[in-house]
Image (cartoon, rainbow, N blue to C red; front, side, top):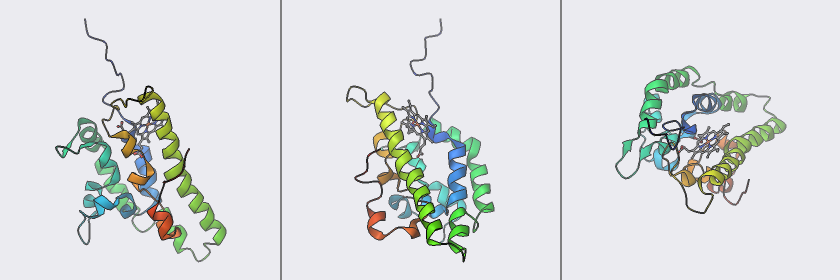
Length: 184
Ligand code: HEM
């Protein structure tokens, strides 16, 4: 008899949502999807491929003790990486960030709406999702291993992801404390 799989979702994980990745690529320049740690590894003039080597969501699928990509990440990249690179090349210079902020008519009201979107997508949703993950993965105070195998409490927190779509609209202090001191 085949033993019952204790975790039927394995080896799938939310970080493998290609749609989520397509939205990010349409919204902002690739450099905004690389956290400070990743930026230290980038060359002076990174290619699209290089950006994807250091993109923030790699943290969900790399074993930091060995540096090796886990199965979930390898599988995800095999299926989608080419399409991410192709899309990023296609929208280079015409992401939402670049179009909206270069508009002569980018009014203060539009800027406020863009900031609201940035905050909802990149702080409020992640914190709400993290709370949900905690409900299921840490019901008794002991964190369980997630299906993707990430250090999920760290990986999912906006202050570690540092994902922002419109960083030029925020002040230095707001950027430095992204996602800190907020609860969902
Ligand atoms: C029981 C509910 C849920 C749990 C326990 C959970 C858990 C997790 C965990 C731990 C990760 C990090 C990757 C990993 O190690 O697997 C993750 C990523 C993700 N999950 Fe969920 N999740 C839940 C529900 C949802 C729902 C309902 C959605 C969407 C409607 C969703 C969308 C995502 C996305 C898009 C990511 C990637 C986030 C990013 O890279 O910033 N999750 N989830």
